[in-house]
Every structure is written in C-alpha cells, then in structure tokens.
Image (tube, one colour):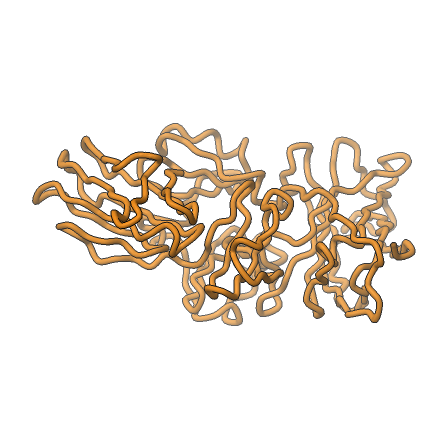
Length: 386
C-alpha cells in the first residue's frame, strides 16, 4: 500500500484549478480542508448540523459529469464551528481491482450539505491531474464504499402520477418518475420540472455540443440538452452537471467477465466482444445509450434492443415481439401507448429459444390510458419487467 499523502486546502467557494494538483494513480490521500465564509474569508464556516461532500468526476468539454467516480462525505474534525474536516481516499479509488483510471484531468467539487444530502453551498471547485506511475500498489485495495452522487439522490423515486409527487421543497435536488406517463421530474427546491420523457423538449433548451453551453452562472436552475450526444445538463450556478449515463471508466473483454455490479455502482464498462456500454444499476448491469425511437406502430412489430417502441392501439389489438435475450444482454426495450385505447397490446418473447417475459409466455397491457412498460434482458432467456 502506498504511503498516505496529505493535501491541505483552504476553500471559500473559489476555483482552485490554477493550483494544478497532481495525483499518481493508486495514491492514498487524506484531504485536509479548512472551509471559510466566501463573504469573509477570515471567518470559518460553521459546520454544526451540516455535512461536507467531495466528489471526483470526469470532464466533458471542461464540465463535470455525473455520477462521480469518487463521492466522499468528510469527517468533521474538532469544533464544527471552526470549519475543519478531512476526506480520505484509498489507493483502490483510482486503481479499481488493479486497473488504474485513465490518466488525465478530472473535476473536483466540495459542497456543504444539510443532513439529508441537499446541497447548501459550493466551497470549491477545480481540476486535478491523475498521472500514471511506474509501480502500482502491490496489494489490491477495494475502493471505499460508494456514496450517493450529490444532487442525484440515492436513486430515482417513483410516484403514481404528477398529483402524488411529494413536496418539491422537501425533495430538493432529487429525481422522481411518474408511473402513469413515464416522465422524469427534477425538484429545484421550489417546483417539479420535467427533464426527460414525453414532451420534455418543451422545457429543456438545446445546443449542438457541450462546448456550446452558455455560462452556467448566467442560467442557473436550467436544463440544456446537447444534440450530439443527447445528454442533459443542469446548471447549479457555479458549473454545469451532466444528468445522464456515467462516463466509461473501465473495460471488459466480455459481458460474462463484468465484475459484481453492486461493488461498482454508478460506473460504466465498455465490453469489447459486442462493443456495447453497460452501467451498474445497483445489483445488475444495464446496457446504456440513447434508446432509438421507433415510428408509431399500428400492427404486429418485432422490437430491437435498446428501443423505445410507440404503439397506437386505436385500430385494434396487436403484438410486439422482443429480440432474443442472448443477443442483447442487459438491453432495454420500452413499449409506450400513445393513445388512450382499451385494446390489448401483447408483448411476446422470441419463440426460437424459447424466451420468456417475466417468466411467462407473454405479457399483456390491457385497459385504457397511455401506459408504458420497460423490459430488461437477463442475457440468457428472460425479459424482466422493471
């Protein structure tokens, strides 16, 4: 194990990129932080009743992406009114199971939060440079337990419909999905804002690339989509944060060789055997990438992997058949009714293996409303409903 390196920083909401902190892969770090009031840098920040979070993120066009590679809650040292705290990284944080993170620049963020993890104040942001080293740690070190990414909450909350969403003021910085229409909403602390699904284009601004995003300080509390990647970015004022798939940080020769997803929550692997990218979703690997949208189907249709299938049942009942589970492990298919119709949509598995849907020979969507269903391939013989 590498010797512990202590990095001391005094933070008062400034950009520390000019300090050019360089860290070798596999370094064991203790960050010694002294937090000062941005309006009076001689006065310590009172951390009573607060927490401090530090994150390390990849960069896209100079902006940090979510979820972070490393997310750590600081230990407050001494009297909390003195504003001092420490954050620990082990060598396994930058050398995961013996494979170092890609050398280069990463974004560093420090925030104070309330006891529920809601951001209160940005205390410092900047960049660090991760460099390769001649000798990696001799002993394989497991990364410290991942903490929930700041601003995204522990996972996606669910509500039956918009009317049953909890108070936005109580769920600031969190995302909820409404089961009746599949829309995802974000709480800015005042109101719920649609950020994906349905008519989200009505509330999300668009630019060509991440390099075309406007100055984040001029458009706080807004969302922008980059048309080249489809990612959605959120301005918290000081900077842009990407809301979407995690950056690719690891590689694997085959899907079957992927490690335990619960250990790598929030990380993404590229698999060379099928050139697909997978993210860890708690206890499963899920193939990621923008879902291809089909034209509206009015008769029997065979879906493709990672496709959003729109169906119109007003002319009568019909079937949607899923691809072979073995050909698209961890893939997703979303089937969405576009009109309110009581005709039945039947989802069928591929018949040549045969596959199953939720362990059965078919799955039916009946009744009125614009219902949707999301299916996940186990890579063997079953499509699970999630």
